[in-house]
Image 1: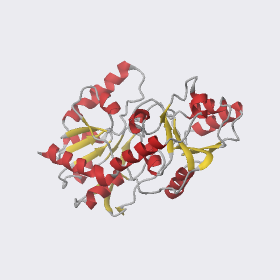
Image 2: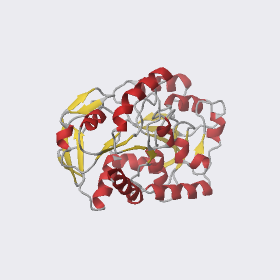
Image 3: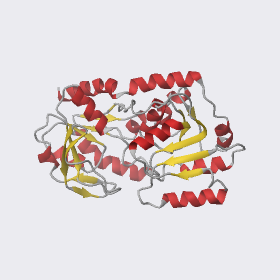
Image 4: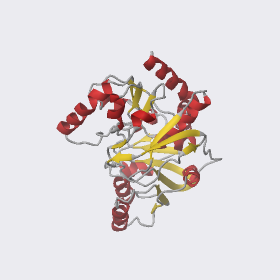
Length: 332
């Protein structure tokens, strides 16, 4: 998202700088120093933990900016709250969205509420994220999507399903595996396009596939180079999103932009991405009816037309105007 927003703002004539940590503790990757995709980058020393990172010297690095856009709630929020440069916070998946204990969630909400109230604006990526903010004043600002990367010609490969995105505990892969194992007529192949960041989760999922007799159907492709990832998504008949929580669901819109039909879980912001069933199929992958619902997946012209309309509205070239207006309002 950061790159898409940065490029859209630069194309609109704004001076954009990406401030990024010098490493990512999850996969070791980071943006290159100097210039990335035509945008100036400033790399700062990483500190903190994988789940609560912050960058050393952030206040000094952004002192020459008119406004700072903080992507996500993490330790950098507190540094910006102590500074003098106006800043906007966009939630992009709250750090506490997977906290099951109401008491613990209220504690975390209470910790981040004071610095959030110092922001010029707080933007939630979806109504789901907004509801988790614990009463902090905010508005919904849906991000844009790079919708022009890959658009397939014709239909996808019959029987090929893809599950785009990383493997994580809340992504629902095990629910999908169990449901496919109970299908009377399962797909020919289900490819999981993403890695587990070294967590070992993929090994457990592979064991589950073998135990349920679907190891010949599921393939765990790991992290793919971006162009290969886009091509494989575009080749699929269906893109499947069984997550138990998503704060927005960028992958859903990217798959729709490629012309691929999508099936999503009823949790988090995923139903919003398919207009609650008008632009994609919504089903509970852990439910008893999931195998029958998966077997019944069919392309629908009306859903496809609605999905195309949502994709056009999600393009960064369209969304950037709301961001520019939002910055101006926050600084007024």
